[in-house]
Image (tube, rainbow, N blue to C red):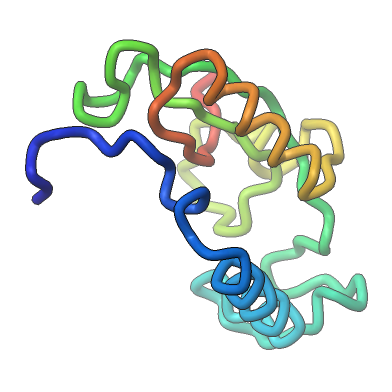
Length: 136
């Protein structure tokens, strides 16, 4: 585990711009031959194709807010900044969030809009930002 003291700068902000850009480029390459979930179907999602997961290249945000239902080390004093994404690709039959996860109930969001949401949560004092599936 860590040293016990929380980081004061988010990792992405401490990276040199060329390193961050290389990571983004790598993810887009993986997206074009998709291996980002357990299905590993290899579909080109950058061309708008739908993979085995039945998810295309559109992200849907169901809701977002400081979430206090996590362990202390994850939520801190101001909550874990959680962005609840719709259209989960795993389609678990025992899903407790069927409407959001299976039926893509949420608003379409661009990567820039999701980044703005993350910055908004950070401005509210959330020291972690994470994606998740909502507990409705």
